[in-house]
Image (cartoon, helix red, strand yellow):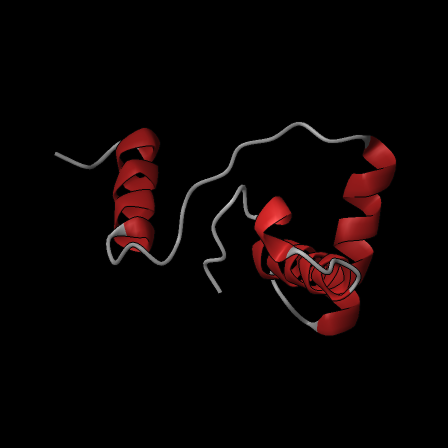
Length: 80
């Protein structure tokens, strides 16, 4: 018996998150932000997931550069 699309998606998500380096994220964002994500992804030649990760890590790096006491940002514990 052939797998349903839902079963295929479930197995795909399990494979992608199996090693613990990735997590699933489901969000609803504004149309303008979605179009920006699509344009950035196209520009950089990345998937939307990878582009979103790049944007978030860049924003965090810039934020941390302006913070003296990083324990405030990390909630009392510097992890990196």
